[in-house]
Image (cartoon, rainbow, N blue to C red; front, side, top):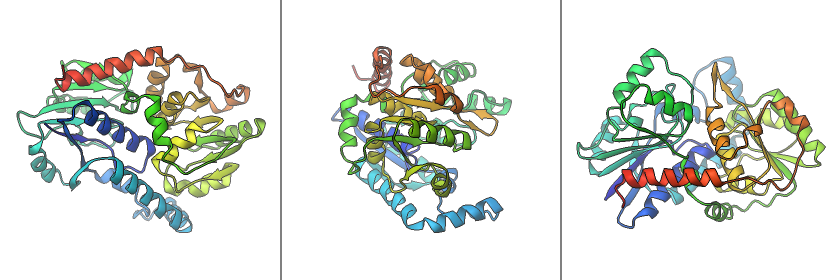
Length: 373
């Protein structure tokens, strides 16, 4: 049985790579007869986002390119670290690149195609392939834990999505809001499931964190996808108050200088996904606005605080609301200024009962879609 998975796997983003890795490994382990590979397809939007140098000659991009030049060695090493992790840990197809015609031809080999997870349905990216509009007529098509990244779609987007939703046979999403939204534009059943990283137990991720050579202690780990002065001040004050240093990873390479100038602590650029897991597992506390940093904080039962995040006019917190609801920790999503009133405790009691129930439901969805009795 040949199975092809298409998702965001080449983004130099820890959550994207780890969710791609998690789904690939989980499906591969279900049945020894499954031949599973992640389709090495990527789009222009991703490529531009993670390019070291920006071609647009705006003043902002000129400044970013200067920052890149100042940190070029570390940034190149970070790219190498991601590439090495992907090549070792994720079974890839031959390189398809962003050639949709080649994708359609290559996908004729698959008996089952799976798309998931992460923000594959974010309309800003506009990628029809993430609705599985390719493959043989008898190919089973499964959407696993799709995320839209937004709480609403425009009229045109709803019409476009409704048409694209004709392709998949099984549909599941990651957030409550996405389930309601997609259910309103298709007659197909839309299941709510967990992110692929949550299909695996804590022990699995502990072993993966052991692959890291990092050995830091007594620190607060900071990982922000949207760096703001307010978030930085709150993190600095919290670390100072609790006699810890900050260890942080910049999200995008052009933010290195901003982190260095604002955060009081170590800024690590040459960090692979295993190192990311290690830094969360061994931290005194985690301060983040990242969904996947929150996921692994829960998995490792760490003290954590989440800040909200906006992209333009869109609020990106729906995924955090759903995730925190499973463990009844909605109070961990706070405004940066509220962190000053929070006490640090090394032991956090996280009730995983509801999360385990949802894990069973997610596994049942996959088993049914893959026709595993």
